[in-house]
Image (spheres, rainbow, N blue to C red):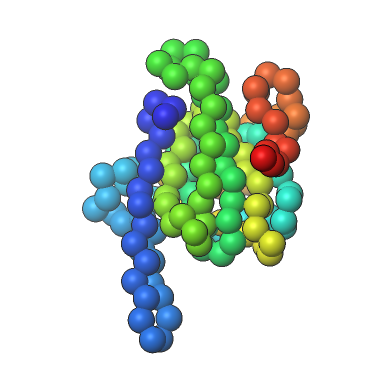
Amino acid sequence: MIHQVQIKQLKVIPDERGRLMEILRCDDDLFQRFGQVYMTTAYPGVVKAWHYHRKQTDHFSVVHGMMKLVLFDSREESPTHGEVNEFFLGVHNPILVTIPPLVYHGFKGVSESETIVINVPTEAYCYENPDEFRIAPDDPSIPYQWERMDG
């Protein structure tokens, strides 16, 4: 796994009224600080990639649908420099993935309906000077293809 990436297995507590799932708590080992909470979505088959942050750590979880999350470690000083990680998260695999600064990430909706992602980043979004650096989903500097692997 890419250096400093963390996974937390999320516990779903169902009863006859519905269900509850804690995503991130201030007493979790992986919690650093609170910036904001936001939701983003992806329609089936849509790729949102690639970007990284210089300061911000992201904490991704999926509360509806399924998502393929891919990380690429471009940090030259990292012991996992050049490594790619792929995670499937959502209703069939309720996990929280912590994405450290300077790690490229992107995701693809892989369910038959819209995928809903909750992110709890360590920084609030700065509208005047966003901590977000983007490249195209097919940029050749990242050794990853977004096509579905059948077989």
